[in-house]
Length: 277
Ligand code: NAD
Image 1 (cartoon, rainbow, N blue to C red):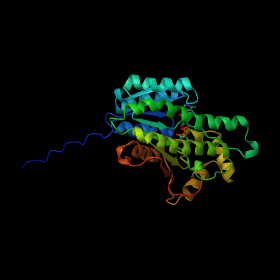
Image 2: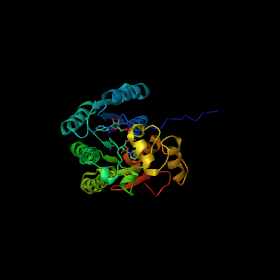
Image 3: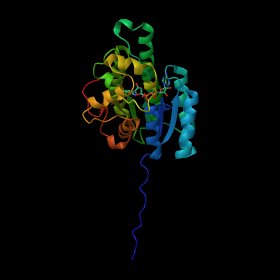
């Protein structure tokens, strides 16, 4: 009796090149892993040199040495951003996918929001997204004939719905969201799609939640920063489930892939079902 020969399907991201900013962090590393798993080459860019090298080494073991590289890059530094994209072009030969994700978070009531705090948020979350998109642009345009170029911004639910005591962070996120819409319009003739993923709280796996943000958010909601905090976000979601970096990575993957070929200037909220920020 003849046995059916099963031929494994080719990995859909083979031949695609991605750069992920904040690639050493929770959501960035999970997104990079999702792309690598399906055959993409990934340049991890992060300002944290030790962390990005650790993530790179782990991925090299897991997915193979050839597909992953790392570059130290602060997205607020024009020169370092340019150098990161130059490195990507040199090492991999171009760029098909940008995941603009590097971010910080801070929380303060408006009267306690210093100009420095305001500027720090805008510098990473608005200017950083502008600088990375601008540096990616000529590389993405060059891929026009190949098709499939995509920019994915990691936004935030705080950028679409009002957030308690986080006006600097939330409004900077809203600025990046609108930048994405403008770039979608500008990129369309070049075949460059630009979309946003808005996570709600991703507590486990995110370094943002290891810092002051945790205390500050707990304070803003009047709850305990320990287990009560996770329960707060879980219980207010429709599905009653925690949102994990891997959940965000699935949405990033969809928007980066040809499965979303007819989507640009759009947003996907990954929040387990929640209208509040
Ligand atoms: P994370 O702290 O785990 O990762 C962020 C990464 O960005 C870190 O590796 C950090 O070193 C890097 N980074 C910070 N500033 C940088 C800079 N100037 N240049 C280069 N790299 C820089 O946090 P995360 O939760 O993975 O956050 C990723 C993105 O997701 C951020 O844009 C954040 O605002 C957004 N987000 C997170 C949540 C959440 O609850 N975790 C919710 C909504 C949106």
